[in-house]
Length: 349
Image 1: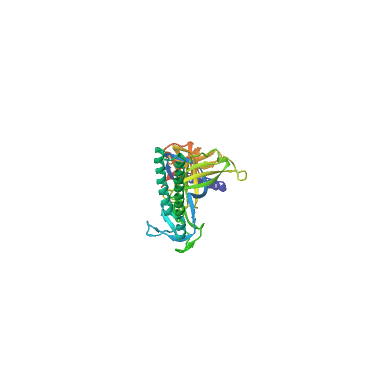
Image 2: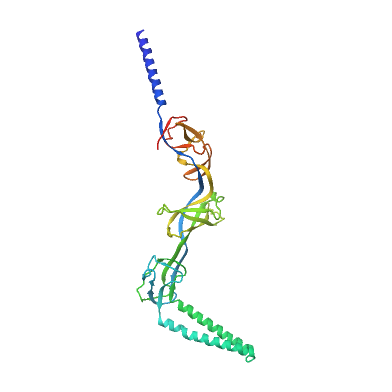
């Protein structure tokens, strides 16, 4: 009998302690961090990578044999060097070769042009007065035209003694030659690039063909300039699919006016294929995937409320919410992993 009474008292004490523990658990608040949802924009994009190249580049070679003379850059007061910016028409290298110049006979060709012009004009005047035949006039005209061609051809040959920039750009290669040494024709003199505009050839998966259109905007970034995003645009799309890689070629033109990105850099592109404004957007890392759907937690009167959500546009970091959340809901972004519906919470910063 005493044992029975003792057992009953022990059960009562255990039950009492258990109830107190449950009551204590009811008062425990889970610390969470929240954000107030606001309407914002979201972009869906396709990620790609590739190497950027300059739209304009040229390797200039000598067209004659002559004595090498690297000129002074007026902008720096020093001889032209790697990295110097030049303008279209700037003379960078000059060749000297008296024998070459003498063989062109520029002065005699110029005088011959002047004489033939005067003769032609005189024949025109005489023809109008009946003093010469049409045949004589035409012969004078032919001589004048030939003299003009000869003189212009001589100017072209003389111009081969001057290496000028065909467009504005930056010197990216400048082989060294000893000053005044004789350089053979077809020797590389310099390499010039204009990389204020770049292009990137990429290969995209066959499944993306339906989403890619000419004129779509592209965000271009590089790990060396993480804080700067360049703007690009799709300019060319191949309609053919490579049978081996199941991909198609696309060309992106990039605006690089500040010369932040250099030719040859490896870049990442985000091709914007869809966008939405004034919509609810949340981070992907706060979403829990459960059997009954994708869920998040919001805080309402110090209680966690579980919400089932429906997705809209997505990108690697964010997702648009079509249903399940409202503007100004307090979304739990930290501490949600252990929450249950109607768990008591304490909001902390």
